[in-house]
Image (tube, rainbow, N blue to C red; front, side):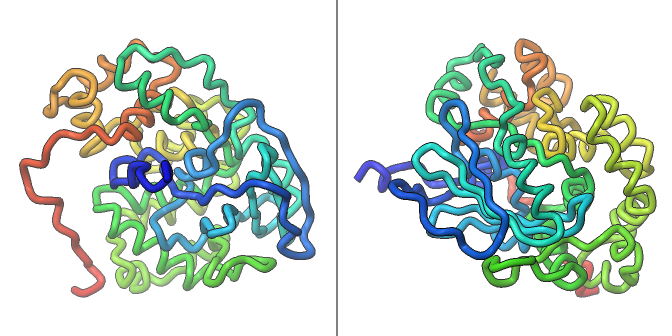
Length: 335
């Protein structure tokens, strides 16, 4: 009965990385197919929906799926090639299975993906709201994918547009130019296109997907140096961000959104966002008109953990009452 009254996800908590994954217990179910397998036991509680939620780009993301049996499926283009990964928690043990040329790479990455290198104990709440949210979300860990382009490209698509527009563009482009997910993945799952494939997408297809020339040009510049950008995985987050920002069109907002996922960067707070400063300002100081400077000042007590603090604030669901209409949704593909 208690689960029936759990708070439902909102747009704000979803942005904080909340994805509903049905909880399954008891005996481990049989493997979903003839893929490679491994298990890993996390230290402490782990919530798959919170850990992997930031990797989902909308409810119809063709690279991510949460299924009723309690599994999370995701695809990736690894250094070894495309692959599909299924992860489920059974009795406190993470069971993983993978298919495709990149299966071994994906399985080796499972502990990092599930937050093994994250240190939530290093975080000390300084506000009652943050402490309460942390208490209610004990399974939060920061994921580390070890892949840059799969987070960079959708982050560029999200620049200066509504999330619905960005999710639609991501969905259309990946389904049209990606390749079907290896293995017995749920229907309509795809692996993101290779760098060269992104570079060969015609201009009119970007337009049909609702992507303006500025964002398309940024992605084209990035995929031309994709190998160099992927090397940033081996750098500290700040150095990785500096390398990403050498590409024209990639600024602090985009680089932060990328390393939060690729590196599990606990301090990479997103600046330049339309809504986040007001949400943080309202939650911590009742200031709905806070700008980036005010937000950074309020998050200063969390230095080293500012991204985690911002995520907990988003997951609290506390937002200022709406005073203006939503940002209108556009579609340049209809022009």
